[in-house]
Each structure stands twice: as structure tokens, then as C-alpha cells.
Image 1 (cartoon, rainbow, N blue to C red):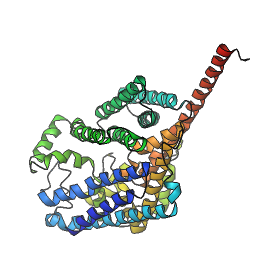
Image 2 (image 1 turned 120 degrees about the vertical axis):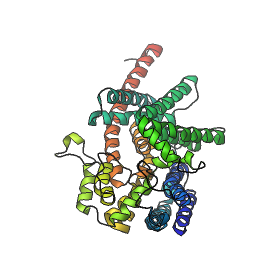
Image 3 (image 1 turned 135 degrees about the vertical axis):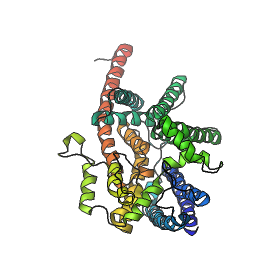
Image 4 (image 1 turned 180 degrees about the vertical axis):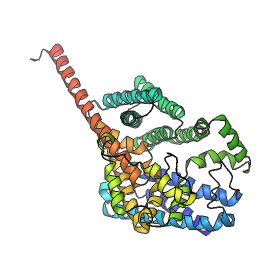
Length: 434
């Protein structure tokens, strides 16, 4: 299929564009390629190879694409995808040409950690786990959701920056990584698992670590093996039995990839946008109103906040499926959201914003201050760079900024206590005047 070949070439080109950058931006671009390859190459390839008949419970075999053995509708969807990938590719090349020296200065090694960085990140991580326990015990609310960002910020920052030079620090790294994997299992969410893998990959590639190839293979292997487990935890026994029956209709060689493909569903979002048509979603004014509202804490909003994933399910997917989302939050992606908003120009806007967020997140985690490391960690943990559009990204950015502000205050307290402790120690050991 021609369009699938074009998509593959564009993703390969994006991989090469990543070589124009160094350090954190390069790895983030490559992770984007990995995400999008599953959605835009592997999933369409399975549909074209197997030609599965749509059936209840099979989210891979989209009935909207099944006409003409998936070739006609899938070609139209991938045309939109190719336009989006091409625009994003051009955006990265243009940024590289304009900001060449400034972009390539983003490096973890180039920023010295401020005193109290790891203590602040550790305290933030503990506070976040209090929020997570609260969610398990009493359900979710805006306050507990915000506390969850502290766990994300602390875990990502510690996994990325804490030196493994002592036995104690190595134990801390193991505990933090293990706890995030356990939370992924407990919450049946791939996000903590993917963020842990990303933090460790950044640590290996950017900071530098011995036996790189073995460690990368181990991280990727564990991540892929955990996907079926997390998928199984999200469903009950009855649904699990139905999925097993659905999987049995696919060839044996394809079945191991189905649980992975189901969790990367940007192709479905692009299908939503294709059937809706360019510029047929909401007005530009409404779009910017929602985007700006994302930066306002939920209790301060006069009305009910519109959540991007739920809005996509109710307002876009329902157009071609005939049913509302039922409160489900869907991944949309910059291509689908941009096309639904304003066609090609919408994708241009989304591409620029996505690239800006990528370099901002890379710059933030490379700094040595707790607030910026935590902010960057949040932006990289919640997959806004990989599977969210501008509205979803701004929602995460708004909450991340709130969490970063509180982490900054925690850092001030930690620094002041450390300064007083050092001063008192100097008085006791050297006899300095108080």
C-alpha cells in the first residue's frame, strides 16, 4: 500500500532528523517515532495483512475502515497522517536551522544540581504517594489528582539524576523504579511504566552508563512484557474471555502484538478526524478558550472543566460511531486534533506547539533546580509529546506548573533548613560566632 510506505519513509526520515540534535531532544524524537510507528505502521500493517472482520470487543478491527479490505478508508486516513508527519518533520528541521546552537546546548551534564535537589524530589515523591493512596482509599478528586503529579515529578527526577555512586542511592533508585512499576500494575495504566522506562533510557543515553546495549535491551524487554499484564488488569474475567476469542481470529504470529497495538490507538483518532472532516469540530475561539482554561485550577473555574480526551470521545468520535464516549478519555494526538480543528493549518499550529513542548521539557529536566526538573518530569511522564493534542497537553502543563510551584516552595524550605544545619555545624566544629 503506497500510503503505508510513505508513512514508513516519513518516520524513518524523522529518525534521521533526530540525529541533527543531541542529548535529550534526540532521544525524545526517537521515542516519538517508536510511539507513532506502533499506531501508524504496525497497526495498519496488521489490518492489511489479516483483514480482520469487525466484531464486538475488537478495537483493532475498526468497522469504519473495513470497507474494501481496509485499503480505501485506510489510505485516506494515512494521507492525513502523512501530512501531519511531514509538517512536524519540516518544523523540526526549521527549528534546527534557526536555533542550532541554543537547542544543542540542552544537556543534563551541563547543569549543576542545586543543594537540596534530591531531598526535595524525595519529599515530593512521598507526598505524591500519599495522594495515590488517597485515590485508592477514597476515589479521585482534583486535589488528589494534583498530588499524583508530585509522585511523577519526584520519581522521574530521581531516576534521571540521582547518582548511583553509593549503596544507599542505588537502593533508592531500585525502590523508586519498582514502586512506579507496581503503581502501573495497581492502577492498570501504562503511563507509570512508560515514564520509568523513559527516565532510565534518558539516564543511560544522556548521563552515560556502562553496558548501554544490555541495559537498553533489558528496559525495553521488561516494558514490552508488562503490557499484556497491565492490559489484563484493566478488564474483568468475562471481557478477558471475549478478548481471547477475538485474538484467536488473528494469526499466531500477530497475537503477541495485539495487546500492545490496542494501547496505541492514534490510528483510531486519525480515523475520527478523517470522517469528521477538516475544520468541522469547534470554533477557534472555543478551542483557545478551552486551552487557556487548562491553566486555571479546577475549583476556580465558574463552570465544569472540559477534559480533552472526553471531549474528543463525545464530540469527534461520536460523529462517525453514533455513540457518545461514556466518560472515556481517548488519546487524540496532534495530527488528528489539528485536522479536526482547521485542517492543514491546524496541524501546523499543533506541530509548532508540540515541538516547543518537546524542547521545553528537555530543557527543564536538564536544569538543576527541583521545580524545573519536576516540571519536565511531569511533561515527559504524561505522554503529551507522544499521544496527546494541544488541549490535552495544555491540561497536563497547567497541572504540572501548579505542582512545580509547590515543589519550588518545598525546595526553599529544604534549602533553608540545610543552610541552618550547616551553619550550626560550623558553629559547633569551628567555634564560629552565631
